[in-house]
Every structure is written in structure tokens, then in C-alpha cells.
Image (tube, rainbow, N blue to C red; front, side):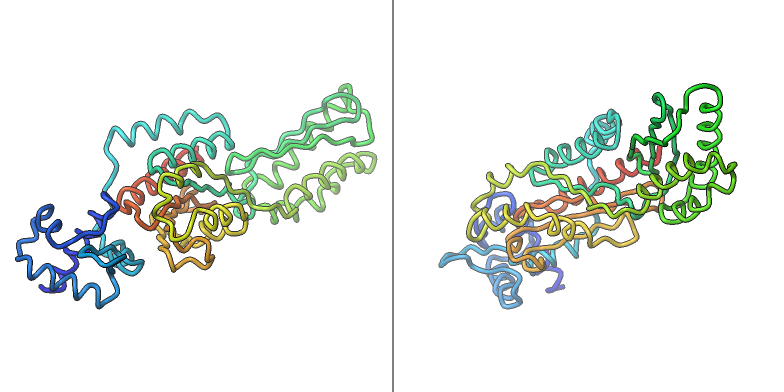
Length: 343
């Protein structure tokens, strides 16, 4: 019973400190929360919480604030993440469903999440390493020039213009392009990138020798698109929100902003994802590997169509964060992004 009571006191301290940014004393706790105990009991519980390293006094006053360990206990003991209201969910769905392509989905997602949480929003583009081929289009654009369009399962589109060394005008050229389109789609569609690239290596055996140069030009370009290594892309929004919470950072915003400029750091922030898309990952303060982020917390979730995990979405802000609301926003937005990519 005493442990449950201390947890209730800790929750009250976290909630009040997040709301007011002022150290919380026993008197304020009794006034704001129905704890059902005496002032002496609350002071005793606060002393025990301090001994356990869950709260501390930032200066010589009666007030206490949560430590990183205190926030961790608070987050781990959340019985459930409070869902967003129907109006909030409808607004999110309508805003994201208006996206016209993958770039627009990503841009809308980070700006929406930054607005919902008043924090920095981070989103990883769908990883090509986890993608498969949805469709390949070949279009003659005059003479020996051919446009190759690769449409990925994530909605991402890659295109390249080739000179195949042969005039593709006329019925013969149209026929070759049509047959080539059918064969490359038969070999590659629905397959992971590397598997599709392997199957295209022997594409020319299905064509007469005089057409091999054109076939090899197309197959070679496709293999390059499918196997070349690309740097994963990460998009940010809401960095200016950090300025409103500058008092929450131990030294200054400098180390945080410097960390956010490093691409590899951003990828690591949202790279600690499990296979369960509904699971949320929360990293708090000293749990960060990068020293510049140890005055921040990050909430992340994975996204992707069905059970396929394609990337991560997250929010970064000071450790004095409204964790339940932030976790609800990240989870909800990730689910809507997953639904959009499944269409």
C-alpha cells in the first residue's frame, strides 16, 4: 500500500512539474490532488522518493522535481496511453489523407506532429532496404531515349532517362518497349529489391540477340536502382519549439541543436524500434548515448503497411514533457501513416 501511495505522489509531482515548471512541495500536492493522507505522510513519501533517486531538490527549497529515473518510473507505470479525442483523430486523418505523394506524406506528418506536441518531430523516410517493387514503367520519349520509372511499395518513386542506343520510334520500337515492360514486371513486381535485382540478371534470354543491347541497358539501370546504397533520409519540423523551453535545458540549446544537425544521430534516435508497430519507445535524459541529448526525451514508434516495418516517427523535447499526450500523438499519427502507405 505504501509503495502504491508513493507512486501516486510521484505521479502527482510529475504532473504538476510538467504543467507549472516549478518545483513541487507537499503543500501544493495536498491542495491539487486528493491523496487522502496527511501532510506529514506526503513529506515522508517525498523523502523516500528522494532517497530512491526519483526526485530531487534543484535548490534549497521545499520543492522537488523528478529525476530521469523518476520520469522512467512514471512512464513505465502508465497503465495506458490516453487516446486522442474523436475530433483530434478526425483532424489528423483528414490532414494526412490529403497528401498527394510520399514526400507530401512525410512533410505533412512532421509538421502535424510538431504542432500537436509543441516539440520537435522527426520522421525517417521509408527504408529502401525494407521495400519491394510495386511496378516498373517504361516510356519511350523520342529516338533512343527511354524513361524508366520504378514505383516502390512505400509509394516512393525513382526515375531515370536512358539512351538505349537504338531508335525506339515506330511499331517495332513500341513492341519492344511493351514486351520489355511486361517481362521486367513479371520478374520484379512484389519482390524485395535485392531479389528483384538478381532475377533481372538473366532477362535478355527471353529476347532475340538483336534486342539484347536495349534489354541490357534497361536491366542494368534497374539493377543499379535496386541495389545501390542510399543514405537514409530523416526529416525534421518544429525545431523552433525548443526555444520556448530553453529553461528546461541544463546548459543551453546549443548541444541539442548540434546533435539534431547530425544525420547519424537522428537515425539512431528513431532506430531503436521493435517488430511491434503498436509499441512505443521512450528514451529519457541520461539514457541517450549522445551527450548533447541528455537533457531531452524522445518518444518513437514504427510505421508501415500491415506488419511491415518501414521506418520510424518520433518526437524530441525536454525531459519535462507531457508523456501521456506525446505518446498518444506519436502512436496515432504512426497508425494513420501506416494506413496511408497500405493504400
